[in-house]
Length: 443
Ligand code: DSN
Image 1 (spheres, rainbow, N blue to C red):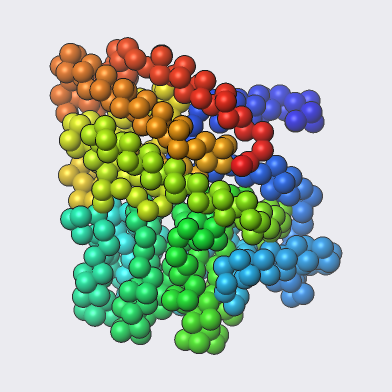
Image 2: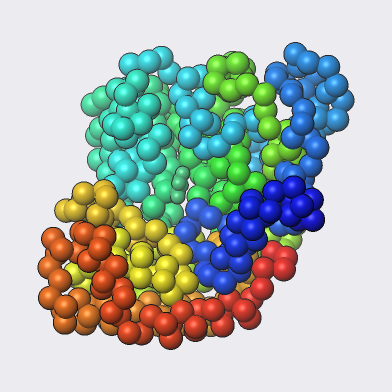
């Protein structure tokens, strides 16, 4: 960062500190990952200086010779890797990409059917606080009491409400999605079927999670999660999508630009192209397999320590812990984990009795720590750190006489964490673990 240090030492200092934070803590938010240096170089390149409204060979400004080639390469690689017919690589991120699909295939007020937020859906799948819940008649399905998707309920809701579009996809669901069942449900009511594979796209191309490509009409993925690229997104149209609606790609392209976006971020698109090349290499299959093996080991260990997992385990990269049997808010555990260097997030659990701001769960995942080379042995250590931590937190909470209501106060949570004696030692253990797996280059 020699130029940055000279021109803006304040920002340089913050960047360096963030780099150090990432080096010395465990990145266990399941939607986060670390891109390779090659991806970073593409994103930081001069391609970011170029305006390129439109699509390759159909732009509004001059000087497009190279960015056209970059964008075409990204699209060609995306089509090959995800086995689809068409790709739009311009969406800035996942939320605008989902909006683009809705804008392309629905009219305002149309019925859409998506997974409820507290069941592991995304805001843009029709949550009432999101644009998608305000401008569409959003009907929401949920998981069953066992934490698994309830396909009979989804089918019943689809038949009753006749949605124009069904969204199959999740942000906090640890299990395999049955794309074939979704396709049957969508076909029964003539709906478009969108698979939001943002969390799992790396697992899909790595061959450890079934691909929705043969079953759905459209796929949307962000590119920075398990796929390990820069922050961006892609909309992919399948063979089935074209068979249902031959104009579908044209509608989607027009919805992305000029419908929702201006100039595409060609530097990010170059980073996406690089990430897609990396993801097509044999080592990526090994990486994806290890992500799932790590998550399964971690889940098994957590279960053995008495943690309750939503759905009882995981088939993917993600684990959702239900803390109700521990009598601890997700907020408290998330903050305490951060203090020892495990970075995860508080999360609602299905049918959460607590409000979203004080949810009963935490969500964690393995893409980030697998990128730095950690394996089953390290997962066992992490589970034991979490076990020691929560045991101590609960004892301390009791000793300090903190009630459930009290725990909602930030100050009380701070006091609880400050009195939890095992934290400094656990922090050292996590620090030493991180040191053994430096962030030199991604695995
Ligand atoms: N915010 C992302 C996640 O954490 O899952 C989804 O957009």
